[in-house]
Length: 322
Image 1 (tube, helix red, strand yellow):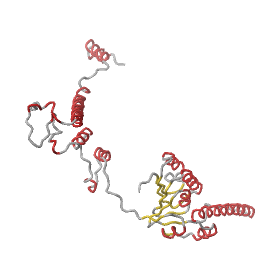
Image 2: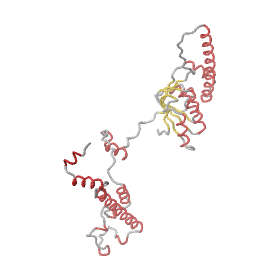
Image 3: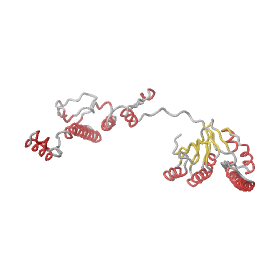
């Protein structure tokens, strides 16, 4: 499956970011967007932001792979369609705060800390009820049912996630198609001394220039009965005879009677071959032009030094030193 966006790792991290998600959605405005999610959760605010962005776009399909939990499940609530790999897992649970306190407290400090915890508890309960309602809208179940499921904190299989209504379809995609070793990647590996795996060697592209590929495509336009050698430069061939004096055997096409389309292709072929020869000629001359002369950028300084040495003896020069 081709994805326009992959969200992995910690929700709110660099690889599961709401700003980048919005960038991809804006780039594909008015087009379907496929998103792969593989995450054990993270920040609630980031998940809600991504869910809202999916809903605003209007045509987002989310596909879950591996193990997904917490905020990662909330991120897909705004998607138009949600699918899940047959071997993936799905977990919903109650919201939580990271509370870590290590201090010496008197009774007043403890009382204040308890009040802070009670306030955090009330806020978490609001989050839980809101998330349960959001899940319920997708699952077509009551918020109470979803809240009870959140309390269990149990991973659901793909089948169970489908039964609850968190996803719309279970997928079992076939293996990816054969690998493609494109020309740019092969060149990069060769230039940087990177060994290409033997399994990919059979997909190595043939070494041919752009002009060669164009000539080959033109050649394929002719039928086998045309008997035309496309690799032959007819213009510079000394053995080329006047077509009017050539006896054409039966079954072969007379060049003088060829169609206008064939003539146009022949002319285009000749122009491309000429352009190729001119480019190769320029390349052959380029190194010579770069190294044909040596520039002396400070001739005057050398002449002054030379004149001083001729006027003074070695003893005079030594005595003149401080």
